[in-house]
Every structure is written in C-alpha cells, then in structure tokens.
Amino acid sequence: MAFDVDQLSALAAVVHEGSFDAAAQRLHVTPSAVSQRIKALEQQVGRVLVLRTRPCRPTDDGEVLVRLAGQMELLGRDAMAQLVPTGGGSRAAAPSTRRLPVAVNDDSMSTWFPAAVADLPPDVLLDLRREDQELSADLLRDGTVMAAVTADPRAVQGCRVRRLGAMRYLAVAAPDRRDRWFADGLGAEVFATAPLLAFNREDGLQERFVASVVGRRTVTPHVHYVPSQSAFVGLVEAGLGWGMVPEVAASERIAAGALVEIRAGRHLDVPLYWQHWALRTPTLDDLTERVVRAAAKALRPVRRHGPPSTAG
Image 1 (cartoon, rainbow, N blue to C red):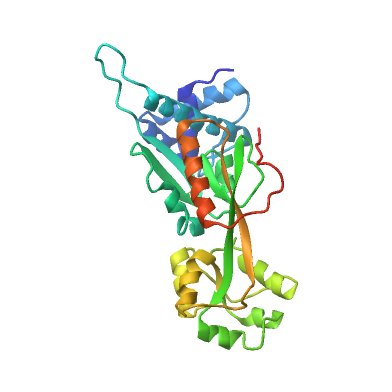
Image 2 (image 1 turned 45 degrees about the horizontal axis):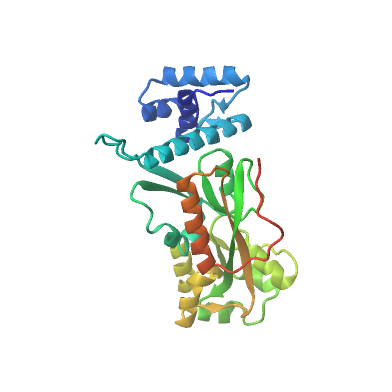
C-alpha cells in the first residue's frame, strides 16, 4: 500500500501541534485542506487515525503512521544531504537541515548527555524533550520523538533498544539535617517523618531506596516536588529535605562537605537504554554512536540479560 506524503505530513502535524488549525499554520495550508487529507488517509486504511479531542491524539493505528511520516521525512533529508554535485559544473541544492526530536530525562540532560551532542554537524538541529526516563517510551509510541533515553528495556513497536549503562543515585542530605533527622538510625518511623524531595509525582526513587533499607514500602507524607535537577541538588544542600541525587552530581558536593550520604554504601542503580526507530540512516546511526560512546564514559556497566531487542 502506497501512502501519500502530504496526507502523512498532515496527520503528523495535527498530532504534534495538537489541533487542525495549528497544523494548518505549520503546513501553510487551510484547516479544511488538513481535514481533507486526514479523511482521505483514514478512508484509505479503513480506520480512525486521530481523535478529535483537545489536544488531538493519535489512535494506536495513527501512532504507526505518525512514526512512518517522521521516518520518511528523515530518510528524505538524509538523502538530500548525501547528494553530490552533478557533472558539467552544475551545483547541487544546498543541504537541508535535519531536525532530531529526542526525549531525555532531566538527570541525563544535566550530566552526561550534553557530551554526546556537543559537536553535531552544523546541519543537524536538536529538538530535546525533557521527560522522565520511565515515561519517554510514550513519546516514541506516538511518533513525537525518534529516539529516547529510557528506563524501559522493552522495545517499543518499530524501535530498537541499546543498553547504555546504569545511573547511580545516592541518598544525600545536608550534614546538619542528616544529624537531625537520622540520628536514631534509618527505621521506617524516621523515614515517615523526615522531609524528602522528589522530582515529580512519578519519581519513585526515594520510595525504592526506603524499601531497600527497611524492607518494605513506607509512605512519606512530607514530600517537596522539584522538577529541576540543579534546583533539586541546591535545595537538598540548603536543607529542605533529603533526596536521591545522581552520583556524578553529588560527588563534588560530598567532597566539599556540602552533602553527606544518609547511609554510606547504599545506592540505587537505574539502568538506562537508548531506544530509537528501527531505521538505518546516517543521521540516526551517527546520533546513536555518539550517545552510546558518551554513556560508556559516564554510566556504570549493566549486567546483560541477552541481546538488545527489536520490536517489529
């Protein structure tokens, strides 16, 4: 089955922009034209592809075609970039820019990930989406991004997975707060009263650490939500609460005496994976190699449980 490129582009624009009007502005056509293209595509495949909600969302079938639209665009741009001047002195068209939408969790973005993309080719433009490593796979499913740093080793349909390594987290607090809150040890009652910081409501690192220490889940009612890695570390250092901080970010502050581990030797290792479209293009291959190389230098090894996986 052959797909119309304009129809696929209209579907992707509606999903990414959230509405038919915004998609029309992006594509420089009328909302009616966008609607007609999507209706024609839905008639071709015989199923609904986008939910007319606010914002518009793709159906499961729509997600497949949104990914296809992005893959076709990337293939086209990579092909254009590889065109060489023809004979007779004529000049090839100037290479078009290639935009890479990638989801990266805040801790990676604030520590090791910049080294992976610091010297990208000048015609490659990043579109980084900050997303929790537990949730970034959703952006791969709906075609919003072509690659993601994720904690999920299971390949999203149409994607490949590469192991990157493990990010180690330390449970830390300001020295005087550690002495005040944990003077009597690290029992369940102590954790139930000591204030803590979490990145957001999906951040379960603190709960996992407590469970590893006391042997069971413990509800801590005193939680501050701080969705910024730099602010998170600064507020732990200021004494607002204790929290789980990446080892690479905590080590310097521990050496300076600004932070201490609430229990030395206790840590959590969170395995990270690189998921990307199961597509071989020079741009995506180059980005993958850069990310894998940077992760190997910064993250801890992860014990292997079989070969990397691909979901068809």
